[in-house]
Amino acid sequence: MDRLLNVVTILSVALIVVVLASLRRAHIRSEYSISWLAAAVTMLVISQWQLLLDWLSSLVGIEQPPLAIMFIAFSVFLLVFYRFSVIISELKDANIALTQRVAILQYQVEHLNQHGQAESQN
Image (cartoon, rainbow, N blue to C red; front, side, top):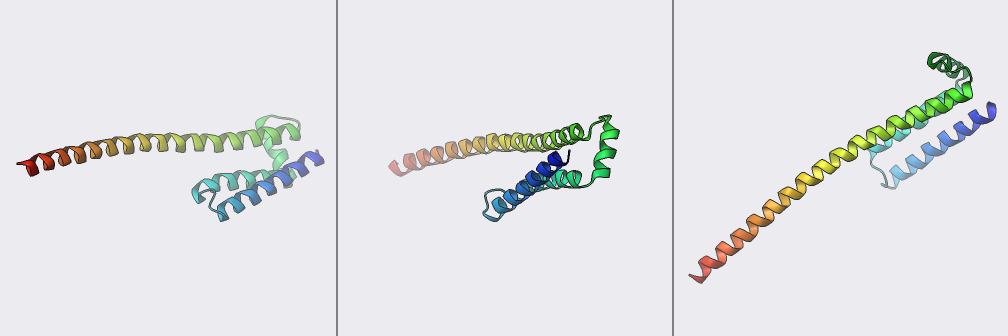
């Protein structure tokens, strides 16, 4: 069990470092990095606080703490992925609306150009 907790600790710290480095280099926006940092810190706390892990395992009804930490990790990252699915859906809707606005503006500009050319010929 100690080996699993050490691996989770190392992976959590590595995730924190990668997210902070990506944030520093502007590869990830700050509002998205918060989800990843929260997930990594949650896993770090759970892997270092044995009493919390034991309490959470008994709370969810899992007798073996290694299974509980994997269940908790899966749940935390499932929430992060859900959040990103919501964000992607909002961005897709905004992209469709923006495309429609650009098409309307393009039509209006072409109509004005045609109208202006017709007037200049008269």
